[in-house]
Length: 219
Picture 1 (tube, rainbow, N blue to C red):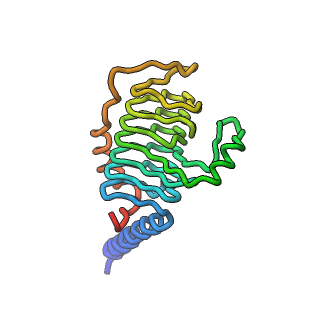
Picture 2: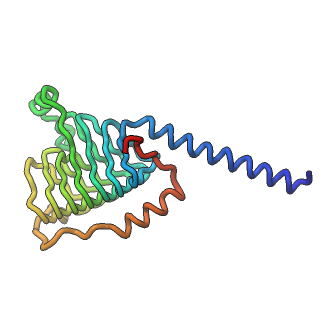
C-alpha cells in the first residue's frame, strides 16, 4: 500500500478510537453522578452534577456549571437554561455570604429531614450566578454574577440583576426586579419571556462540540 492509503487507514482507526473514547467518557461521567437526567435534557459532561439531582426535559446545562445536592435533593423542572460557571447548591448550612454560618440554623438543619430544592420551568441562570434558594418558581432570570441566598424564596417572573445580592429571609413578590448597585426593587407587568429559541439552538449545537451525559435509564 502507498503512503496515502496508510494515512487514510490511520485516520479511520483514529476516528474509531475517538468515537469509542467519547462514548466511554459520556458513560463514565454519567455513572459518577446520581443525577436523574430526563430524555431531552442536554447536560454537558464538563458540568459537575453531584448528589440526588433531577433534571427535567428540555433543560440545558452548560460546561463548567455546578449543581450540588449536599443537604438534600435538587429537582430542576423543564426548559431551564443553566449557563457556564453557574453554581446551584442545596447547602448543608446557612451561609450568609460573609464567611459566617448561623450556628442555630446549622444545628437545626442537621436534625431535620432533608430539604428539597425545587426549581420550576423556564428559568435562566446566567454566567457565574450563585443560587442557594430552596424554592424557585417559573420564568425567573438570575443574571450574571448575582447571588441568591438560601433563605430567599423566588416565586414567578422575577429578575435578579447582574451582580445583585439577595440573601435576606423573605419571599419575593411575583415579577419583582432587583437591579443596580443598591439592589433597588420594582415590579414589572409580566414575567420574562421563555428562551425557547435559544434552548432549541443549544440543544442542537452543544452536542457537536461537547460530550453529553446520558439520560437515566428509568426515564
